[in-house]
Amino acid sequence: MSDIKVGVGLSLASDSALAARQASLEALEQAGLKSATWALCFFSGHHLPGAEALRATILRETGCTSLGGCSAMGVIAKGEEVEGVPAVALMVGGASGVEAHSALLPEDGQGLAAFGNLRGWSSGNSLLLVLPDTFQVDINQVRNRMCSEIPELPIFGAGATDDGRTGISLQLGMEGVRNRSISLLGLFGELEVAVGITQSCKLLGEPHFITNSRENILIELDGQPALGKLIQQGQALGLDDFQQLSMEVMFGFPLDTENPQFTGETCLVRSLGGLDQDSHGLVVPYPLINQTSMAFMHRNPKTAQQDMRRMVKEVQGKLTGPPDLGIYFDCAARGRGFYGRAGVDMEAITAQLGNFPLIGMYGGFELATAMGLPHIYTYTGVLLLLRGLS
Image 1 (cartoon, helix red, strand yellow):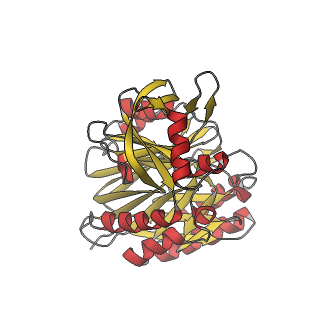
Image 2: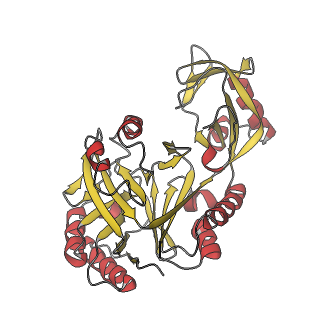
């Protein structure tokens, strides 16, 4: 049996210090701990003004020596997906065979290299949770730094955000509370780590070749105007309104251009960024390369639910036994606003895996290592399952 002790607490109190205390005590009780080695906290935008009190209370109540966390569009804990109300979710843990380190880095990611060189990363299974400010961190620049400075470390995380009202996010660490920062929490040691990625989108028709593009402007597909191709896809779906089309039809780019696939972690999905007047091309926030493939993808709640169930079953099979803990990074564009009701993803997780300590957040984007490199995902759910080795 694993000696990992993990617990999760959830509070809906509007007072930040009270919410932190309630979540801390509940998490410690579930874990069977008097004090924790590490803590991970997600909190709704309602607690932005009280974030320092929240952090101080967590440190006092849990006694943790490593802390990571951030604000979020919503939080996930105790089998609930909480959106639109004050909420604090907290996970605490401790284990003799697992070590934790945390850091709060500046917006450019300076310090990643030193973090990657910490003793122990090379032994056992490791993971690094990365929680950047969605609004003020250039995540593409940070991703490049990750690839060059900590290429061996599996990266997972999400963009810290707010509840859609302020455009401000905050990151937590042992060092304090900051914005324009990156909160890190690393776990390594005697661990099994399994990850699954689910898409909100389904492949439409056959993939296409990019025959003319300029930077992030998609001009031609298969030798024909890309705008015309997009409109044809919309008409096939009965989407005559262009604004609605741009919300439902996405662009999928395979990670493996030699063997393109468009499910799960194998592709990155981007939305239409606008129209280029000079070329009549489509502006897509992605580094386009001519003579590579892409596909139109349809955001669809029904197929998203099916893919969620597929992913959970698949990731469960990667572990040798039941998970000791889970972390779920969900896109802010999923949840109740996408499905029409709350709790859809958690239903899929608990139906397959039962009840176990799990914490999550709705973020501005998702981060996950796939095919050996960290990638920036959107419209996805990233599920991490961890199990202590006997």
